[in-house]
Amino acid sequence: MSKLNIVLFGPPGAGKGTQSEFLINRYNLVHLSTGDILRAEKDAGTELGLMAQEIMGRGELVSDDIVIGMIRNKIEANNDAKGFIFDGFPRTKAQAEALDGMLNAKSEPITVMLALEVPEEELVKRLLGRGATSGRADDQDEAVVRNRIREYENKTAPLKEYYSAQGKFKAIDGVGGIGEITARLIQAVG
Image (tube, rainbow, N blue to C red; front, side, top):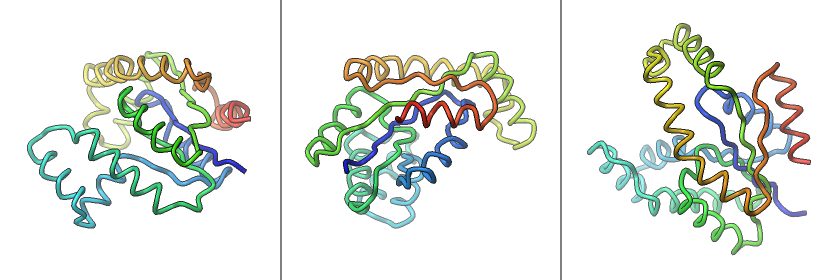
């Protein structure tokens, strides 16, 4: 049986964290979150982790080469996995092409790109609500919240086109009860 490789997308506040947990448990997938991987590599003191730490210490973004190297290491360390859920990666068309190259070489391509779609006003309401209870500074200022949503839309538009061209893009209505949204995702996976 071929591996189930899912790219999970959604703007801040769309419920990616909650929904990725359900998908991971249902399909027994390995969660690949770039933030988690960067922290783990840094904490482990790997060569890539030390390079990333130096770059982040200067306030710069970690290059595609380093991030892709870390993703490759994680995939190879989990060769027997039933599949992966990519969260926060790829972020650019170049990263998507590199990921495709890596997975296609193993004959384990991306199965589907699921994009949780939620209207901006609902996202703002959710994030400000989360900010009031979690204390996260980036969820407390409406202007910052709206800017994060715009950044997401601008950066991911090319990826929607990229996966649409492969027939792998599926938009999922991210409004409703958690169970309803989970059911829509499961139906989209097929």
